[in-house]
Image (cartoon, rainbow, N blue to C red):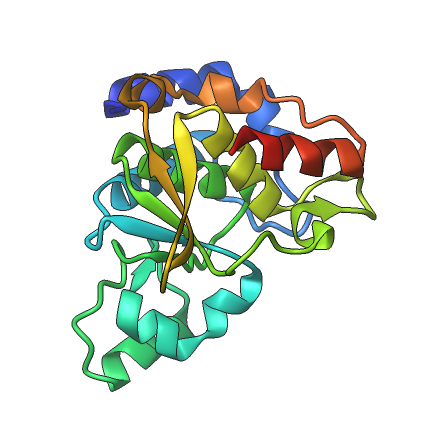
Length: 209
């Protein structure tokens, strides 16, 4: 588990690498330190997920109201339509410590915090698919890099997770090595080299599980 002081210290040391994944369109907070504080809250919300699981998948999950109402969302600031759907349905699902990432101020660093929080909480990660998704769901061909789903799976691959195909649940990633899980740090994530070859990356992900 990351204590806040250590998390912030690691983020400050990695500020250049973290800044490099900030999209041009992102409306940044007043300072990177504010981003890091916010990221720690995202980390904690994922670590303490109310259902003991987090859901992996495409952006389409964020607008699947049935799923959001049933499983809730992980967020610091929940996207308004998701919060409204949960409230309208009278659901008891969490709008901050649920299973589906749905953050208004999203950018890749917060996504990394979400995955790392889940890993440190030894949450199950459920892939919203009965089999491996197409390569284009794992690899961004235009930018020659992993998609967010591909990046999430890459992080899980170094964190002691194994894949079990569970009837009725599909592809579920469970933690099988708590030492690797608890040892994951921001430095490990930002040292990952996915390469620039789609076939090699996809083969690497599938072989890891």
